Length: 354
View 1 (tube, helix red, strand yellow):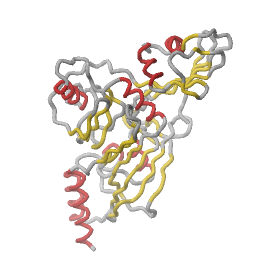
View 2 (tube, helix red, strand yellow):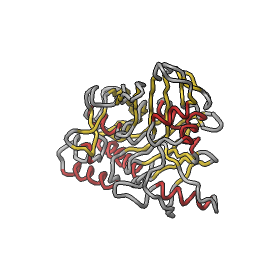
View 3 (cartoon, helix red, strand yellow):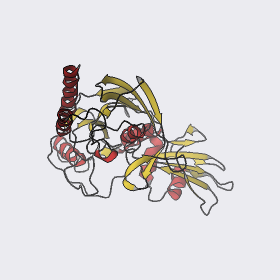
View 4 (spheres, helix red, strand yellow):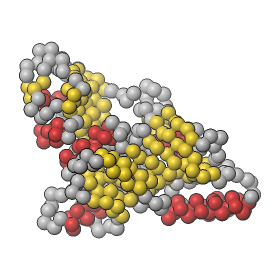
Protein backbone atom coordinates (compact mmCIF):
# COMPACT_ATOMS: atom_id res chain seq x y z
CA UNK A 1 0.00 0.00 0.00
CA UNK A 2 1.01 3.62 -0.46
CA UNK A 3 2.45 5.20 2.66
CA UNK A 4 0.25 7.67 4.53
CA UNK A 5 1.51 10.54 6.66
CA UNK A 6 -1.05 11.05 9.42
CA UNK A 7 -1.58 14.23 11.39
CA UNK A 8 -4.17 15.13 14.01
CA UNK A 9 -5.62 18.63 13.41
CA UNK A 10 -6.77 20.76 16.33
CA UNK A 11 -10.43 20.05 15.51
CA UNK A 12 -9.87 16.37 16.17
CA UNK A 13 -10.53 15.36 12.56
CA UNK A 14 -8.33 12.60 11.18
CA UNK A 15 -6.38 13.62 8.08
CA UNK A 16 -4.39 11.26 5.90
CA UNK A 17 -2.35 12.56 3.02
CA UNK A 18 -1.15 10.27 0.28
CA UNK A 19 0.70 12.27 -2.34
CA UNK A 20 3.37 11.68 -4.92
CA UNK A 21 5.86 14.31 -3.79
CA UNK A 22 8.60 11.66 -3.86
CA UNK A 23 7.29 10.15 -7.07
CA UNK A 24 6.98 12.95 -9.62
CA UNK A 25 6.06 10.76 -12.57
CA UNK A 26 2.41 10.88 -11.49
CA UNK A 27 1.37 14.46 -10.86
CA UNK A 28 -1.47 14.34 -8.35
CA UNK A 29 -2.16 14.68 -4.65
CA UNK A 30 -4.52 12.47 -2.66
CA UNK A 31 -6.06 13.40 0.69
CA UNK A 32 -8.41 11.50 2.99
CA UNK A 33 -10.37 13.06 5.87
CA UNK A 34 -12.62 11.63 8.55
CA UNK A 35 -14.98 14.37 9.74
CA UNK A 36 -15.16 15.04 13.48
CA UNK A 37 -18.25 13.97 15.45
CA UNK A 38 -19.04 17.57 16.37
CA UNK A 39 -18.75 19.06 12.88
CA UNK A 40 -21.67 21.30 11.91
CA UNK A 41 -22.96 21.23 8.29
CA UNK A 42 -20.49 22.99 5.99
CA UNK A 43 -20.08 23.13 2.20
CA UNK A 44 -17.46 20.64 1.21
CA UNK A 45 -15.32 23.14 -0.70
CA UNK A 46 -15.04 25.34 2.40
CA UNK A 47 -14.32 22.33 4.58
CA UNK A 48 -11.56 21.04 2.30
CA UNK A 49 -10.03 24.51 1.88
CA UNK A 50 -9.57 24.65 5.65
CA UNK A 51 -7.86 21.27 5.62
CA UNK A 52 -5.46 21.53 2.67
CA UNK A 53 -2.76 24.16 2.79
CA UNK A 54 -2.57 26.46 -0.25
CA UNK A 55 -5.54 24.79 -1.97
CA UNK A 56 -7.62 27.40 -3.79
CA UNK A 57 -11.41 27.17 -3.91
CA UNK A 58 -11.25 27.01 -7.71
CA UNK A 59 -8.89 24.03 -7.56
CA UNK A 60 -11.17 22.22 -5.13
CA UNK A 61 -14.30 22.99 -7.16
CA UNK A 62 -12.55 21.71 -10.30
CA UNK A 63 -11.89 18.51 -8.43
CA UNK A 64 -15.56 18.25 -7.45
CA UNK A 65 -16.79 18.94 -11.01
CA UNK A 66 -14.38 16.29 -12.28
CA UNK A 67 -15.83 13.70 -9.90
CA UNK A 68 -12.65 13.53 -7.85
CA UNK A 69 -14.27 14.09 -4.44
CA UNK A 70 -15.89 11.06 -2.83
CA UNK A 71 -17.80 11.00 0.44
CA UNK A 72 -18.26 7.55 1.93
CA UNK A 73 -17.24 6.13 -1.44
CA UNK A 74 -19.79 8.10 -3.48
CA UNK A 75 -19.05 10.98 -5.88
CA UNK A 76 -20.68 14.16 -4.56
CA UNK A 77 -21.75 17.52 -6.00
CA UNK A 78 -19.83 20.74 -5.19
CA UNK A 79 -22.64 22.00 -2.92
CA UNK A 80 -22.59 18.91 -0.69
CA UNK A 81 -22.47 19.71 3.04
CA UNK A 82 -20.25 17.55 5.20
CA UNK A 83 -21.73 15.60 8.10
CA UNK A 84 -20.14 14.11 11.22
CA UNK A 85 -18.00 11.02 10.54
CA UNK A 86 -18.11 11.46 6.76
CA UNK A 87 -15.09 9.86 5.09
CA UNK A 88 -13.85 12.26 2.39
CA UNK A 89 -11.39 11.29 -0.36
CA UNK A 90 -10.12 13.92 -2.79
CA UNK A 91 -7.67 13.77 -5.69
CA UNK A 92 -6.16 17.07 -6.83
CA UNK A 93 -4.00 17.67 -9.87
CA UNK A 94 -0.75 19.34 -8.98
CA UNK A 95 -0.86 23.14 -9.28
CA UNK A 96 1.37 24.88 -11.84
CA UNK A 97 5.03 24.90 -10.83
CA UNK A 98 6.54 28.03 -9.34
CA UNK A 99 9.22 28.12 -12.05
CA UNK A 100 8.46 30.77 -14.68
CA UNK A 101 8.00 29.15 -18.08
CA UNK A 102 8.82 31.00 -21.30
CA UNK A 103 7.71 29.95 -24.78
CA UNK A 104 10.51 28.59 -26.94
CA UNK A 105 10.39 27.57 -30.58
CA UNK A 106 11.54 23.97 -30.31
CA UNK A 107 10.48 21.23 -32.75
CA UNK A 108 8.16 18.65 -31.18
CA UNK A 109 6.07 15.81 -32.59
CA UNK A 110 2.38 16.35 -31.80
CA UNK A 111 0.42 13.17 -32.50
CA UNK A 112 -3.02 14.52 -31.63
CA UNK A 113 -4.63 17.70 -30.29
CA UNK A 114 -8.11 18.94 -29.44
CA UNK A 115 -9.58 21.49 -27.02
CA UNK A 116 -8.67 19.43 -23.96
CA UNK A 117 -5.56 17.33 -24.58
CA UNK A 118 -2.33 17.17 -26.53
CA UNK A 119 -0.53 13.89 -27.26
CA UNK A 120 3.20 14.28 -27.88
CA UNK A 121 5.75 11.75 -29.07
CA UNK A 122 8.68 13.01 -26.99
CA UNK A 123 12.17 12.73 -28.42
CA UNK A 124 14.92 11.23 -26.26
CA UNK A 125 17.08 13.82 -24.51
CA UNK A 126 14.26 16.31 -23.89
CA UNK A 127 13.36 17.21 -20.30
CA UNK A 128 9.60 17.41 -19.71
CA UNK A 129 9.46 20.50 -17.47
CA UNK A 130 11.86 23.19 -16.17
CA UNK A 131 13.74 22.61 -12.94
CA UNK A 132 16.90 21.10 -11.47
CA UNK A 133 19.22 23.00 -13.81
CA UNK A 134 17.01 22.61 -16.90
CA UNK A 135 15.18 25.92 -17.09
CA UNK A 136 15.00 26.12 -20.87
CA UNK A 137 14.69 23.74 -23.78
CA UNK A 138 12.01 21.60 -22.14
CA UNK A 139 8.87 20.09 -23.58
CA UNK A 140 6.78 22.50 -21.53
CA UNK A 141 8.63 25.47 -23.09
CA UNK A 142 7.97 24.03 -26.55
CA UNK A 143 4.29 23.37 -25.83
CA UNK A 144 3.77 26.88 -24.49
CA UNK A 145 5.19 28.29 -27.74
CA UNK A 146 2.93 26.01 -29.77
CA UNK A 147 -0.17 27.04 -27.81
CA UNK A 148 0.63 30.74 -28.10
CA UNK A 149 1.11 30.35 -31.86
CA UNK A 150 -2.16 28.47 -32.35
CA UNK A 151 -4.11 30.74 -29.99
CA UNK A 152 -2.87 34.25 -30.84
CA UNK A 153 -3.70 36.88 -28.24
CA UNK A 154 -4.47 34.33 -25.52
CA UNK A 155 -1.65 34.85 -23.04
CA UNK A 156 -3.39 32.75 -20.38
CA UNK A 157 -3.32 29.44 -22.25
CA UNK A 158 -0.68 26.96 -21.11
CA UNK A 159 0.05 23.23 -20.96
CA UNK A 160 -1.01 21.34 -17.81
CA UNK A 161 1.17 18.34 -17.04
CA UNK A 162 -0.45 15.15 -15.78
CA UNK A 163 2.59 12.84 -15.84
CA UNK A 164 6.13 12.75 -17.14
CA UNK A 165 8.74 10.39 -18.53
CA UNK A 166 12.49 10.52 -18.01
CA UNK A 167 14.66 12.85 -20.07
CA UNK A 168 16.30 9.98 -21.96
CA UNK A 169 13.12 7.94 -22.39
CA UNK A 170 11.30 8.56 -25.66
CA UNK A 171 7.64 8.18 -26.48
CA UNK A 172 4.00 9.05 -25.89
CA UNK A 173 3.17 11.74 -23.33
CA UNK A 174 -0.29 13.08 -22.43
CA UNK A 175 -0.73 16.79 -21.62
CA UNK A 176 -3.93 18.62 -20.63
CA UNK A 177 -4.92 22.03 -22.01
CA UNK A 178 -7.13 23.19 -19.14
CA UNK A 179 -7.53 22.60 -15.41
CA UNK A 180 -10.70 20.50 -15.65
CA UNK A 181 -9.06 18.11 -18.13
CA UNK A 182 -5.94 17.97 -15.95
CA UNK A 183 -8.02 17.17 -12.87
CA UNK A 184 -10.05 14.43 -14.57
CA UNK A 185 -6.93 12.77 -15.98
CA UNK A 186 -5.17 13.00 -12.60
CA UNK A 187 -7.93 10.81 -11.14
CA UNK A 188 -7.28 8.18 -13.80
CA UNK A 189 -3.61 8.09 -12.85
CA UNK A 190 -4.60 7.77 -9.19
CA UNK A 191 -6.96 4.90 -10.04
CA UNK A 192 -4.25 3.22 -12.17
CA UNK A 193 -6.73 3.06 -15.05
CA UNK A 194 -4.37 4.64 -17.59
CA UNK A 195 -3.10 1.92 -19.96
CA UNK A 196 0.61 2.32 -20.68
CA UNK A 197 3.00 0.09 -22.58
CA UNK A 198 6.74 0.52 -22.95
CA UNK A 199 9.33 -1.20 -25.10
CA UNK A 200 12.68 -2.01 -23.50
CA UNK A 201 15.84 -3.71 -24.69
CA UNK A 202 17.33 -5.49 -21.69
CA UNK A 203 20.42 -7.56 -20.97
CA UNK A 204 20.14 -11.34 -20.88
CA UNK A 205 17.68 -14.00 -21.97
CA UNK A 206 14.51 -15.15 -20.19
CA UNK A 207 13.39 -18.68 -19.40
CA UNK A 208 9.76 -17.61 -19.65
CA UNK A 209 7.86 -15.66 -22.33
CA UNK A 210 6.11 -13.38 -19.88
CA UNK A 211 6.00 -12.49 -16.21
CA UNK A 212 5.18 -9.95 -13.51
CA UNK A 213 7.54 -8.01 -11.28
CA UNK A 214 5.91 -7.00 -8.01
CA UNK A 215 8.45 -5.19 -5.85
CA UNK A 216 8.15 -1.98 -3.87
CA UNK A 217 10.27 0.98 -4.95
CA UNK A 218 11.79 3.85 -2.97
CA UNK A 219 14.83 6.09 -3.05
CA UNK A 220 18.18 4.31 -2.93
CA UNK A 221 19.63 4.97 0.54
CA UNK A 222 23.16 5.05 -0.94
CA UNK A 223 22.35 7.34 -3.87
CA UNK A 224 19.42 9.75 -3.57
CA UNK A 225 19.44 10.37 -7.33
CA UNK A 226 18.20 6.90 -8.18
CA UNK A 227 15.55 4.45 -6.98
CA UNK A 228 15.80 0.92 -5.63
CA UNK A 229 13.66 -2.04 -4.65
CA UNK A 230 13.00 -1.87 -0.92
CA UNK A 231 10.83 -3.37 1.79
CA UNK A 232 7.12 -2.75 2.34
CA UNK A 233 7.68 -0.13 5.03
CA UNK A 234 9.97 2.20 3.08
CA UNK A 235 8.76 1.67 -0.47
CA UNK A 236 5.72 2.25 -2.64
CA UNK A 237 3.92 -0.60 -4.35
CA UNK A 238 5.10 -1.07 -7.94
CA UNK A 239 3.92 -3.68 -10.45
CA UNK A 240 5.27 -4.27 -13.96
CA UNK A 241 3.97 -6.93 -16.36
CA UNK A 242 6.22 -7.93 -19.25
CA UNK A 243 6.33 -10.25 -22.22
CA UNK A 244 9.14 -11.16 -24.60
CA UNK A 245 8.89 -9.70 -28.10
CA UNK A 246 12.16 -10.89 -29.61
CA UNK A 247 15.25 -12.70 -28.33
CA UNK A 248 18.78 -11.90 -29.45
CA UNK A 249 20.65 -14.34 -27.23
CA UNK A 250 22.52 -11.83 -25.09
CA UNK A 251 19.79 -9.18 -25.02
CA UNK A 252 16.00 -9.37 -25.21
CA UNK A 253 13.34 -7.01 -26.48
CA UNK A 254 10.39 -6.87 -24.07
CA UNK A 255 7.04 -5.12 -23.85
CA UNK A 256 6.19 -3.73 -20.41
CA UNK A 257 2.73 -2.87 -19.12
CA UNK A 258 2.58 -0.70 -16.02
CA UNK A 259 0.02 -1.05 -13.26
CA UNK A 260 1.76 1.72 -11.33
CA UNK A 261 3.94 4.59 -12.51
CA UNK A 262 6.78 4.94 -10.03
CA UNK A 263 9.89 6.92 -10.84
CA UNK A 264 12.28 4.77 -12.95
CA UNK A 265 9.96 1.80 -12.35
CA UNK A 266 10.91 -0.30 -15.38
CA UNK A 267 14.61 0.48 -14.99
CA UNK A 268 14.60 -0.47 -11.29
CA UNK A 269 12.48 -3.59 -11.72
CA UNK A 270 14.56 -5.08 -14.51
CA UNK A 271 17.79 -4.40 -12.65
CA UNK A 272 16.21 -6.15 -9.65
CA UNK A 273 15.57 -9.35 -11.62
CA UNK A 274 19.03 -9.30 -13.20
CA UNK A 275 18.15 -7.78 -16.58
CA UNK A 276 19.24 -4.10 -16.59
CA UNK A 277 18.17 -2.01 -19.56
CA UNK A 278 20.70 -1.90 -22.37
CA UNK A 279 23.04 1.11 -21.91
CA UNK A 280 21.29 2.31 -18.74
CA UNK A 281 24.25 3.87 -16.95
CA UNK A 282 22.37 4.67 -13.72
CA UNK A 283 21.19 1.08 -13.24
CA UNK A 284 24.17 -0.95 -14.38
CA UNK A 285 23.29 -1.52 -18.01
CA UNK A 286 26.15 0.41 -19.64
CA UNK A 287 28.67 -2.41 -19.23
CA UNK A 288 28.88 -5.63 -21.25
CA UNK A 289 26.90 -7.98 -19.01
CA UNK A 290 26.30 -10.92 -21.36
CA UNK A 291 28.10 -12.43 -24.33
CA UNK A 292 31.58 -13.53 -25.33
CA UNK A 293 35.05 -12.27 -24.45
CA UNK A 294 36.06 -11.82 -28.09
CA UNK A 295 37.29 -8.36 -29.03
CA UNK A 296 35.02 -8.34 -32.08
CA UNK A 297 31.95 -8.84 -29.84
CA UNK A 298 33.07 -6.12 -27.44
CA UNK A 299 33.47 -3.70 -30.32
CA UNK A 300 30.03 -4.64 -31.61
CA UNK A 301 28.42 -3.86 -28.24
CA UNK A 302 30.24 -0.55 -27.93
CA UNK A 303 29.06 0.35 -31.43
CA UNK A 304 25.51 -0.39 -30.24
CA UNK A 305 26.03 1.82 -27.19
CA UNK A 306 27.08 4.63 -29.52
CA UNK A 307 23.95 4.14 -31.60
CA UNK A 308 21.68 4.58 -28.56
CA UNK A 309 23.56 6.67 -25.96
CA UNK A 310 20.76 6.34 -23.38
CA UNK A 311 18.68 3.69 -21.66
CA UNK A 312 16.87 1.62 -24.29
CA UNK A 313 13.33 2.51 -23.25
CA UNK A 314 10.41 3.84 -25.26
CA UNK A 315 6.88 4.75 -24.09
CA UNK A 316 5.06 3.10 -26.96
CA UNK A 317 1.36 3.56 -26.20
CA UNK A 318 -1.07 5.24 -23.83
CA UNK A 319 -4.82 4.75 -23.46
CA UNK A 320 -7.22 6.79 -21.33
CA UNK A 321 -10.79 8.06 -21.01
CA UNK A 322 -11.06 11.40 -22.76
CA UNK A 323 -11.94 14.05 -20.14
CA UNK A 324 -14.64 15.68 -22.31
CA UNK A 325 -16.09 12.94 -24.53
CA UNK A 326 -15.67 10.16 -21.92
CA UNK A 327 -14.64 7.85 -24.76
CA UNK A 328 -11.64 5.54 -24.40
CA UNK A 329 -8.84 6.48 -26.81
CA UNK A 330 -5.50 4.83 -27.40
CA UNK A 331 -2.39 6.33 -28.98
CA UNK A 332 0.52 4.29 -30.30
CA UNK A 333 3.95 5.20 -31.66
CA UNK A 334 6.69 3.71 -33.79
CA UNK A 335 10.10 2.87 -32.37
CA UNK A 336 12.43 5.91 -32.47
CA UNK A 337 15.33 5.73 -34.94
CA UNK A 338 18.02 5.00 -32.34
CA UNK A 339 16.13 2.08 -30.77
CA UNK A 340 15.04 0.77 -34.16
CA UNK A 341 18.62 0.93 -35.36
CA UNK A 342 20.12 -0.97 -32.44
CA UNK A 343 17.40 -3.65 -32.66
CA UNK A 344 18.24 -4.13 -36.35
CA UNK A 345 21.93 -4.34 -35.51
CA UNK A 346 21.36 -7.09 -32.92
CA UNK A 347 19.08 -8.94 -35.30
CA UNK A 348 21.80 -8.94 -37.98
CA UNK A 349 24.42 -10.00 -35.46
CA UNK A 350 22.41 -13.04 -34.39
CA UNK A 351 21.77 -14.05 -38.02
CA UNK A 352 25.49 -13.83 -38.78
CA UNK A 353 26.53 -15.92 -35.78
CA UNK A 354 23.96 -18.71 -36.18
